[in-house]
Length: 98
Image (cartoon, rainbow, N blue to C red; front, side, top):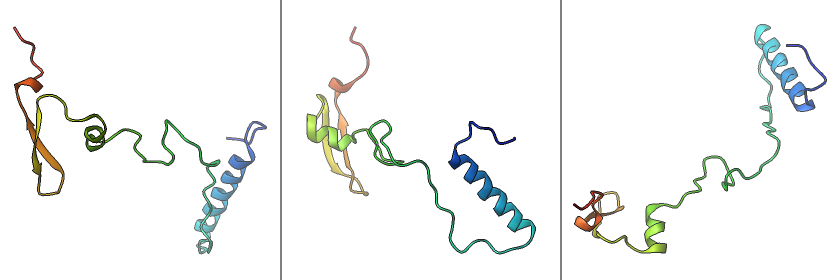
């Protein structure tokens, strides 16, 4: 693909860096001492997350702390990993009553 006027300077710099890397590999040259910097255009929030991989949803434990237990649910304590465990009664059933 040929360079066009629509390409940003960052895109042009990225293509030049890749071309230089290919040239070094073909000539059996060592890679540069400093790894290239990843300039992704700055940081900004996406969907409420401040970084990649950050969950924006509430955990079940947070929901219970904030909203209380749902009707028909009860605790057994904690499982082997330390996470809370529990059960439910008929009140928590998803079936419709007839």
